[in-house]
Length: 636
Image 1 (tube, rainbow, N blue to C red):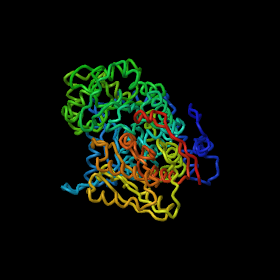
Image 2 (spheres, helix red, strand yellow):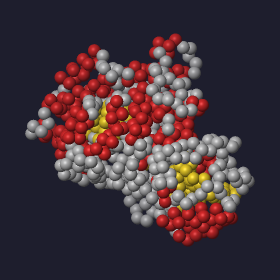
Image 3 (cartoon, rainbow, N blue to C red):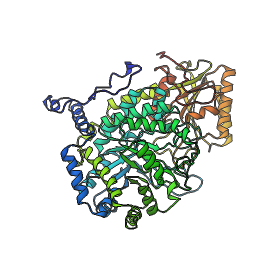
Image 4 (cartoon, rainbow, N blue to C red):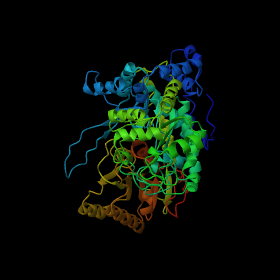
């Protein structure tokens, strides 16, 4: 396999890249049986690449597509356009959950499934409603269920997932990469390529074929409550370069890539999970900003495009007609003008921007007649199926138009080799998913992305002696919803491993003012204060700020540190725009991410163990423009 067409700024930390390149399949079988897990990875990668590289189908695959399409009944064709969903948890073959999924395959002939992580029940209580429903799924459980559903399907199933930050975004133990904006800060397309390639290898080992990534949105609105760090940045050209590199990596690993959310969800202030956003820019502005990354992704050979549940009057003047229902946007702009002939997915049809607008059956019919090939995650698959069938009976959806979508779906399945092999090997999965070499790439991205935007007094690396006392503040936007991982769970032990005397306190918008005053009074007793500040832009929340009381406390501690000559370091996890209302703090380090990898990287930077050289991929006011960042070299 030839390498990507991207330059590497600094190859000194990329020695591991290439260690898992695919080798010739015959060579796999000639090698002695040692280091079997690594050789297995090479061989599996080679098999995936052999399928993924076939943009044009061979004779047998074309024949399979033609024969399948010809033999399908109307109901079977309609079912191919529906993708339902399930969680990656253990499911017995003798249970109602499996029966329901099997019915979707046998009765409604669904074309595929979208897999999520896991959900856990929570009590519906007042006052202390801090329990999270979100949890990570299990790779082996997901693969087992996918295999069983594949075995009963008359047509192979296409399985999709939101693996935006790697398979570990949804699956426990798999590799998780930093958010897309961290790649923008690292300024390294080669790493974006590697992240895509590794994600594809791990996903295909589980039986997942389509990644709903990259996010090709240009995040040029600081108040965007749903895209934010999911975007590579605010420069359309650079977003396009990184998105294209990621597309190439996914394809090299044997997975179908999806550019989303067309024609651009970056300049909104409404979460489409909660309502219907409107982008009112003229067509000229959309051409100059929003559409550029999608054009780049199409040029890179992206296999699919996911549309956005947003209104764009410049492209679709009809009232209450988001891109999801717009023939002008899907057929005329995406297909005719931009020349895209791959799969077009809706975003989840359960999002309230659509589900509050019209019933599931009508929504499915309107989306397909607008030009979509796949209805994703309908609130009611039976009603969606009925809506499509009614559209055919009433002449709104012609059989020729239906056949076009079914052919695209079958072609995608054949390109993946599913007409020959549709199940995965559960025994070999652990040798592929979550390996050390894969995690090393994620760590490298995290370290390269760290961006120091302010350090007026040289507090980074932290000059405090190792026997000095440190007050660590874990500052949260709000305490609910941390089901995947508690904030600071890695930062605190990593800090304690380097400094002998650490006192850790968690603060949030629920912390009483009396307790904030205790922190304010106690802080001067310590030799240094370090604050990990966690601000999310999570789907369905619509929130992205700290409480005013927390902001006031942090500003006071920052001013006090300067007057007393004691270090104060603030590390921002998640939303980088938090820096715009904390700009008075003496030292500000951005990570663009959450949880273990980001927290460990930040502590190493605080301790002077790794360099800091990231550059802002978004502007944070006039003082911190795009491309700004301070450099620090290791001191240990």
